[in-house]
Length: 514
Image (cartoon, rainbow, N blue to C red):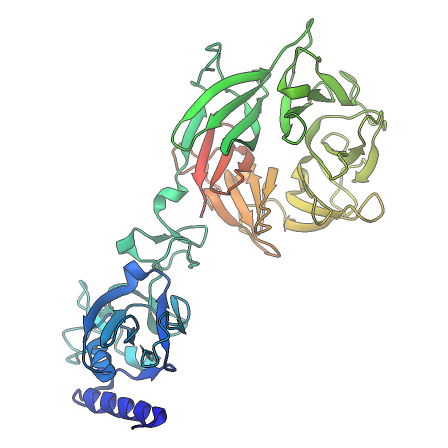
């Protein structure tokens, strides 16, 4: 019986003899073999499997791979003896070698080793180049180019296999994704259909409420989403119609558009509802920052009849800088102890109010506008990471996002984690950002970059953002690809959909996430 080592050497000799029938190295296949008892596991089996046939030997399977110009990986005798499977891709990024599912001692994987010298004729004229290449093909411009399902990689000077999976990481502007599978490298640096960058309008200024037939939306600023029986429910405040609206997004249709807060007993009413928070753990209590009236209101059970709405922070109609007052409250959030943190735009500070308190405690900012680590300028949206006890603040006037530890002394020192490079439209800049949402799964920060007319995603420890919606260059527009001064962003619990308040276009857009 031939030893395993001798068997491998014999296989390699067979391949060298076979390839020597071509006088040029660019039609060779140098095959590297894996250990016995293994099989190839592609990322996308349906897209990467080229053929399945029965052949007498492993060597004949290797020759079949060499004869198929798209084959880069093959395995033999995995599911049954003499079965030969040919694949596109590679064993590094588009698949892996794993133990055979049937633990067949005779199964094996071979892959074609690719080197840059195989592509030295790339870009040359087909008419002048008489060499037949396994790795290049004559394109429409009569020059040698990459074979189908591959792209030219400048850094390695080779044709590499295109990515066959939705959400695969890619470089924007390079055709790294399988076009035949309707995949394009999107501006979010992932492979996907171009439709993922197109927003679907759920509501606009022509939408009427289901209960009264009144206008539902004109000046939408901010948005929040939560789940009821597994369905996405959306709340938003409208600063022009002075109301809070709720609707249910079923993925394919929008239902039950109703006004949940506007006026109540006597002549009291909302004046400029900026941000809405829903407490799903306590009877769906709803909190609203009523900016002009300098107050935070509690609507118990999301209703305004019994009990009446209650002021839980600030003095109604009396803005100021005292500890018991608030001035132009914008975003707010709660920590694990039900303490509320309020961004006061005109006081350039973040105040913390304990439950049933009559005054607040200074947490961030010093009341004076500035760009230092202890200062803020017109703070807007905020977010609390309850697990890590961190506070995030959209520092609009400084075009940055600040992060603060809530476990130290106050006022806390801020660390800039997004923007902070002056107002601008470059990928490391923001321009008058308005609000943010942070993914509990990845830690990515989604920022409504208002004056750049885009939603930016900043991954953990990133030094620049990626445009998740809108124009990367900061161009405004009203079509499905563009935004115009977006001010609110929220993502559903499954992180499937992103909702954007496209404020100047007076609409709510929904985008599918990868």
